[in-house]
Length: 287
Image (cartoon, rainbow, N blue to C red; front, side):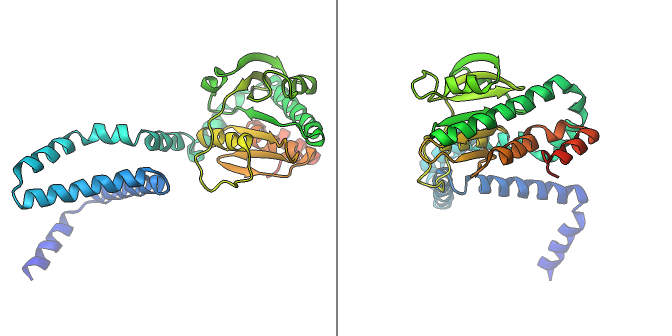
């Protein structure tokens, strides 16, 4: 009864802020475990837990030197964990930064910053990319186009050649011609212009990707996992037109369905109600 009374006395001292604090820590731990569940960091975490068990046993049996050594290790554990889990922590922070829950409210206030010229340039780049994709699909010419959105890809662009030119089917055709020096890399489209070409993209870490997908598709998935970019891929082997976004590959697009999807991803958040009504009549923007 004394133990039960002590437990109830502890519960009586709990306030709402304590519950919020516990829930926040629980969500943080759950998110961390979910993030590293299918990565190599799981093995590192198991090693740390093993060291904790060894430390507990060493303290229990009075193994002074071993327990002191492990205690020193755990005192510096914050720095050690940051070093060991740097890729996972970076991925977590990037996912937080890409959270659509608050981004949609930011876009509401930033709509007025997008001029009519910007919208026309983006629409033109979409149509040019779709027309080029159709030609490439028929001729089995590989292509990789990255449509930049909120997250700037200047570090990726620096691995290629800055062009900063208006888009056109002829320009895309020259860049991705199989004997052109820039055809193997990706091209980045920023604000409706071809900003850079011949860029090197990071490959996806997803082990569940179809083994039949080549380097272009893996690179498209990789940059879509690390940014909010929309990536257009034309397969050199099959001619299939695909889009990668948020680590998901959407396949088998036609010219018109590709324009629909690209305008949905790139323009819909920046159109006012009148523009959306006009585009819906044209079948270009989906609800």
